[in-house]
Length: 419
Ligand code: C5P
Figure 1 (cartoon, rainbow, N blue to C red):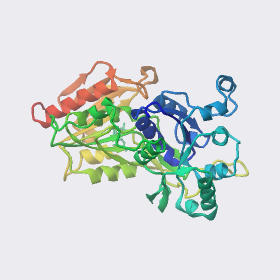
Figure 2: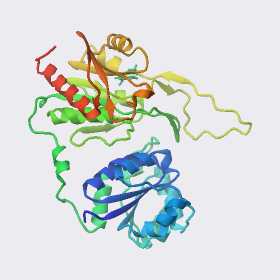
Figure 3: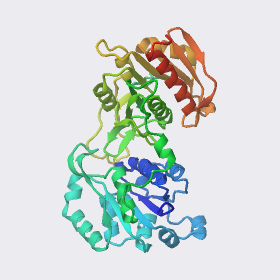
Figure 4: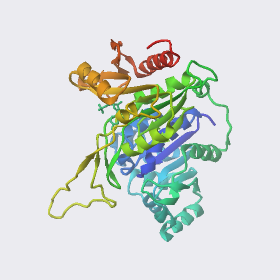
């Protein structure tokens, strides 16, 4: 079973943001994953993210001549032990049911001689529509298996069946389709990532925010930034490793959240603020998220169409809540230690010191994110820790190393050993 090959077709739905986590889970089961991204899927997740996590090239186009000569699409579809479609959108299901082959994904699905498992994800009305039901019945008759969809709150604000099954459930369905039900023996690295029973921070609760926020323009478009979530994720993992109970409030990040922490997924700054408020009380809070400063005031409920006269839409902005400043100045229930980040490109220290005071933070982790540093989205970070007593430059190190050192400092402080 470890060594089985999954061809993973990623359709164009918001649920595609869960696919990196699914790939990570499949890799940990010892499966090899070849991602195929539809053009719709590429609106939600990048080929680079999928290929980095899968450690395999991500295929995107049908007429890629180099690959066509190295490996034709027929061979690609048959090299797999199982073909998985997740998220399977209403459109993709319709095209599969009709036997279309107008892009790489549908061509592979038509050419394969291997079992296919689909994880549908769509709006509740689309799922309940007679056309989708018909397509689902046809696909089932063709022998395609399904996992989900789940019932719950949807990205579009409605409630009902249509949410893609959680990555754990898709992984279990994949293992079952390959003839292996859980529980399997986990590989050793899966075991070490669980929180230790005892540690310097056991008994302490820490809230960590991480990743970007997405501020919708309309149901399909949003404003975001280039935060990968790598530093915040590493901090949550390091705090967990010291035994802390971690509430990890994350925007749509590129890297999957750590194991052994409570993951609260949000999209917008307002949702992030509400999630942090709900996670209180806490002993410490580390606000590592790159929160969007503005939200679109005139965001639309339906997709903005191109104007026939070529006029561009006008967006109006309103300032988002500053979560760090709100938490730092909370009179009732403020965590003992509030840590913020300051990603700056000019006057790094002066700006970060001013930010510490302005936002009521105890510490600011300042870093220079000028493009030439390669820090934004890169594996390393060079930070200066600014506290009440001064500025302490740390040598350039990897983001997990920064996270471990910060977690140790938090443990020192919460244990009352250092100011
Ligand atoms: O003002 P600036 O965005 O540079 O501040 C960075 C710090 O403030 C980070 O710790 C970030 O997580 C936090 N922040 C926040 N809410 C905002 C903006 C920033 O928590 N709306």
